[in-house]
Length: 170
Image (cartoon, rainbow, N blue to C red; front, side, top):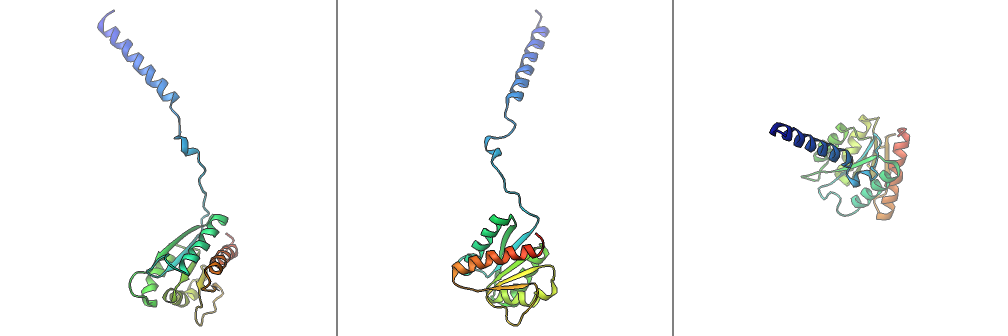
């Protein structure tokens, strides 16, 4: 056998072995078959003070939102207002959530609640929930839940978010 015939046979053997390896290789990694959560095209967003999710009632509100996402498959997220604890400082953060097209916006903390009270009447397609009173505001799109105790906040937020989503047909 000549060298070129031996080289062609070797190349054919390598190509055959590569083909068999490719055919026998698993098409997915073993853990890729694990179920993934399919979210609705809806979101509920929490606006907190600089402390984020630390402490109550914001931690309890977040737990209520997590309970809602497990039951409804709505996406949940939060945004913490940085800087001075004022309504004026909270307004751009609220605007950010509204630009993200949050279907439900939940506010915790006096500055965040005041920002929602100021802006809610302008956004009739968004449902707003405040933890604690939104002084002087009685908008059709606003729900208020009590600010304590934590167990009641969690349950009230979960129920209010679910109700807001059902009002929107989500």
